[in-house]
Image (cartoon, rainbow, N blue to C red):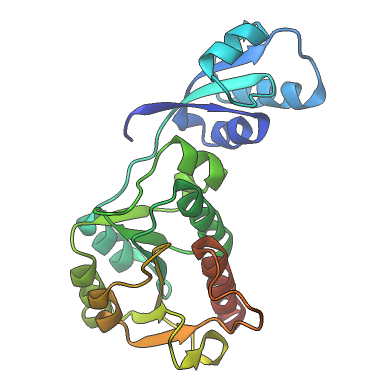
Length: 247
């Protein structure tokens, strides 16, 4: 775990409390006694966490500008894993690896949304380069709605090298997405050991990343827009893979 962070809002705090070791402090508006607050208090009791009953003004000061809905918590921010941890994770799986690679995603809202989709799709890890990419932080964790705590997030120093290891040593099929690919996502075989690779918001896949891919695919676009937001595209690609991988 890395540094602590303040989170606010019923959903974010409820999700964090379900990972009880992540929450270190909890503040609740003293005047609120409705069902949703009672649920928060029950989760806190189950986690043996002390609750501070405070005024709305104190909550406003703890989480400036946030819609805290009467509840604020301090949590340990999840930390990224490294290459060695990724290799251990892959080797320890008893099923085919299912990975999401983000090549240069810089918007924390996009990373948070990608983590949330990855969690829903059953992805084993999300991989990103350390340079020119956003890391885990309060905005990412809030948007991820708990997925930052459940999906391993791996930051690597050399993405192309990591991709080569996945392909050559771990036997993972690398499928990159780009608008100029000749093949459609829906024509690709996404069963078996798989890493879906998405480009950054502006430049897409970098050259070395493209060269490491076994296959490049595009999302069919029927309208006038040229591309989709990376988190939307990731969700579509992940769940096409889920559809194909269903028994």
